[in-house]
Length: 321
Image (tube, rainbow, N blue to C red; front, side, top):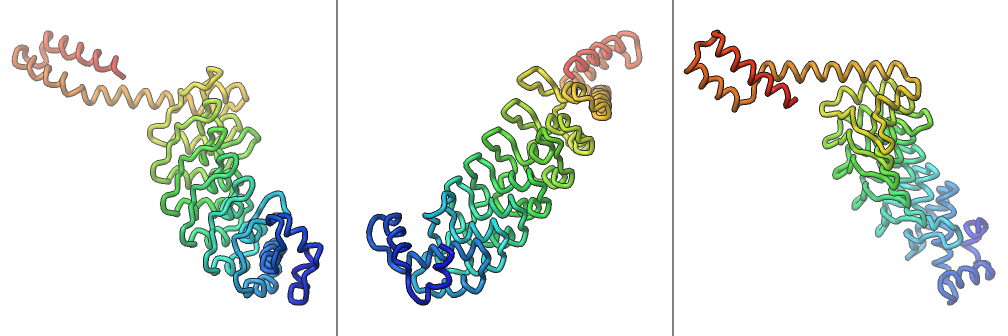
């Protein structure tokens, strides 16, 4: 189909026209449909001047999906996944452009650009009217999940600044962007992306994937010490969550031989317990405080009976921790 772009201004090859005719429903396909298909090819190959000429064809369909390719990409998807920034600009300026078209595997231009690492194109797409940042592909991956999995730090930052971004979206394996950035079972992990995600409003560090693994589990599996430190510093992190096999993040790190991570988690658990005990010692529950004040009216503060009553309340409160 490559030769169509070069000869469009002259004549249309009848055999190509007949092929397109069958794909478009059996009737003779007009030159306009051929021009739209040629636009997809020119966008894929980065032929800027040819794209400009084709976009001048009256009535050209900029949202046409490639009927001769198994992926069914539009010109915008092709330009985005191949990193052709100037072509993306031209296409986005066209009236009626649909930035949310999904191909056969449900990839959008934004998901493709995020996956393959083109921040300039991602920025252009995020500024396009009507862009949906939370659309998912066939595997339920959002643009944010793809970018986090591939270590695209700049793109993750751009996506996190998008209105209505869902930072806790899960893919078909139950994994979130945070889990993908924390570890994937193959030794990967991206601390800078984890930092960005942990700073995002509403992030949930305790979500569990298909095998009941949290982000902490994945970091422990891959031995990502720096990421484990970042996760343990999050208020509300649950280190004793159990997976389908009955393992915790601690036992997982121990089985994998990550001794530095084992020490980190053990120290975290010790410090957590100390903080709880100190909290109880400082503030007996209000109901019990009221009882203590009532006891003060009966027993002299500091006396033996008062001390017994106070100690009983303290022990009861400690059991609640």
